[in-house]
Length: 510
Ligand code: BES
Ligand code: MN
Ligand code: ZN
Image 1 (cartoon, rainbow, N blue to C red):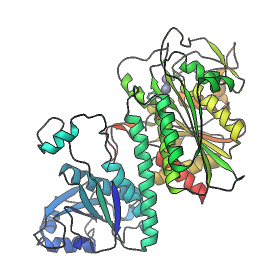
Image 2: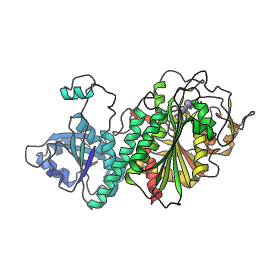
Image 3: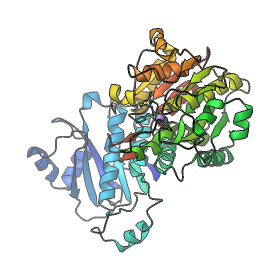
Image 4: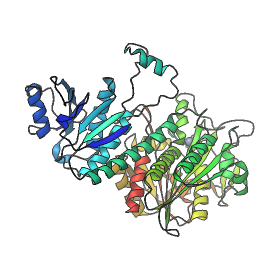
């Protein structure tokens, strides 16, 4: 979607739809909303008086403006919620709401007013508005074969009722155009990165294979000048990455370890690493999962998708930091060659692991990736994200990822980044006593520590492979996909935590 900035009076913008945000409460109208109501002969005031519009978040009301030159054809009042507690997320949601309303009206263009007195910094609001707009407009259409033909037919009663994509969003704001323009570009790039993550998530496992993710990474490298390094089975073997190979043993698709490198900081300056689980389909292996809902395990590469999405935005905006994106990618299937429960493997780091359950495969591929990253790149900090445990969904549901790490400051940075992106994460304790659950008579450790505290023991497993490097882990099993919890999401992959990672990288860039 195109996003433009306009400093003009929003009521003078000729467009099919203008959205005007309105705060909750009695004095919630902005000057522009008052003037729009005058244009409508007080129809909106009457609606408010009747109690039909209170200005709550995700509330809207549509009016048709009288005909005239240089004015919007439709006016949509959009609720913002309580003025005193307004956040960037309220702006994201309001703009998304307007985009979705335009979509359901089959309009491909709209304008949204960003009031000056939002109580949120104007640049922050502009960035959030661009994010909300781009994310709300995004849809996955590439595998709908007759979609275009049905759109042209124009009937709204046909199966699936396809809507044309919203293509153009004008943000009507007031302030310094250079500052607001920069904020708009940042928000748009963050959101477009997240849309790449979504696209990869939504692609089914017969398309989004490990080698497909590697091709996408190579394309990003070509486009943005990243150094890329892609390891296949031979290189993985040479590197001693037997854990990744053990997970992919039951599969005909080859595994990959993908590394993308952005050098925006000083040549020998510190480097940070983003690592994402890229398990393109998790059947559980010999410890096979139940059939019900197994199709969702195409989303088990969501962490890797978010890292690729973040790298796209990093390429687009070129921040002054050194950052690598690393994705271990494999399938987890069953065959006569598959790893069996009880098998003992030697990881790249040299530690031996008894694979008591082949469905705990994410920690295995991440173990090799993490040890590779800390040994080869000596990063100042490593953040990994992974759909790692069902236990995390039980603990935190769908509104927070879990964050665990060996460095309090890093955990705090990630919590703050998550708050800014509204991709929130909440800490669980990475305490030593839990480590006993991974003790193993025959090997250095086993890959599962039983049912209690499953998210914590999974993170403790990972911690064994980062040495003394500052590291934190995000368990995104409950937050990466599912039923939408915001109007800028659709049922499916959300692209999270792409923007959390980006907020963190930007905080580091200063
Ligand atoms: N990919 C799953 C975790 C998962 C579960 C993600 C549900 C999203 C929704 C992971 O590989 C897995 O299977 N974990 C097991 C670990 C268990 C065997 C210790 C789990 O959580 O059941
Ligand atoms: Mn699994
Ligand atoms: Zn998995």
